Image (cartoon, rainbow, N blue to C red; front, side, top):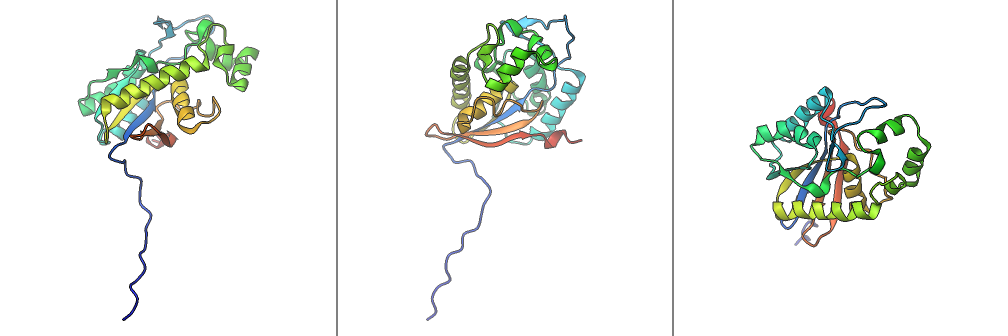
Length: 225
C-alpha cells in the first residue's frame, strides 16, 4: 500500500478574522489653495478650508472605489474637508457620517489657518527643522506628539467600538492623523507615514486582542484616471 500524498498548503489572500475590525483610512481630498497674507477660517482652533475643485473630483473617485466595499459605517472629523470628501460615498451607500472629534488634524498652534502650508512651501527654517526632527511641538503653540498620540488612539478605539467585530468602516481623516495611526500600528519613527496623498487609501486592522496591523498605505489606484 502506497504512502498517502503529503498535505500541500497553498497561499491565500488575507481574510478578516471574526474578532477583528477593519478601518479604511482615507485622507480628505485636496483643500483650497492659500496665498501669503491670507488665512483659512478656524473651527475649534483648527484651519477649516473647503475642498478645492480637484478635491471634489478626488472625493468622487473615492466613492466609486469604496461603494462596493461592504462598509458598515462612515466616519469624519469636525472639519469640513472630511465631510465634503465623505459626501459622495455617503450618497452611494446611504450611510450617515459619524463625527469623531478626536481624529481632527494635528493642531499647529500659531501656524494654524494655512500658515504652516505657506511656511513649508517657502522653506521656513523652523518648519524644515520640525519636519527633520519629527516634532510638531517645535511649532509655536503646536500640539505635542504625546497629546496627539493619546487622542488619536482614543478616536480609533471609538471607531472600533462602534463598528464591532467582523465589520469594515471608512474614516475620512487628515494626513497628520493617518501618519500617527500608521506610526502606532508599526512602531515607526514619528513622521514615517505623514505624507499620504490626498484621497489615498490605507488599511488598518484592529484585532480582538487590541493589536493593530497596517495592511496597506497610500493606495491611489482609484485616482489614476
